[in-house]
Image (cartoon, rainbow, N blue to C red; front, side, top):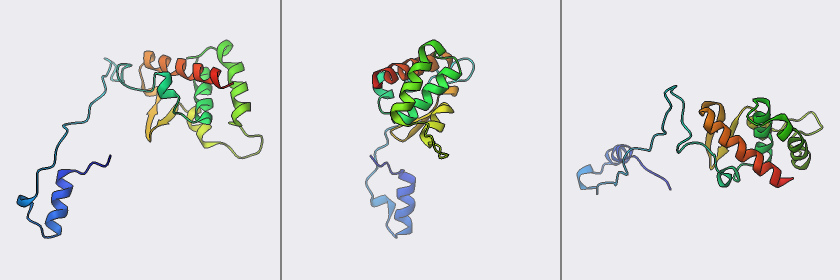
Length: 146
């Protein structure tokens, strides 16, 4: 859904020579919801971040492989649980190609970044509990793909 700011619409109307008083009022849904923050100033697990398997399901397989790499490297997923899954997922998705060309989705995921419906989320910016939930969902989806 495309949202047009009432101010932008009014400016356009004035520039186009319309009287703004004759325009119907545009609905304002109020302010955008803000995430909850911890005492450390980081987004909390409540209501933010892709923590559910349904949300992680929308991540591309190569981004998922990169995220699994991130989760293992930061020890949010143990090497015992993640290494063999990561190796199998990388092979299945060709997330790490043998040639000199890299895969951007994998690199983004390895940096702890993911995109869901065009909205970027940075896993390192989430609190520890939310990071753990994201990585648990990443591991579960990764296992289901191999």
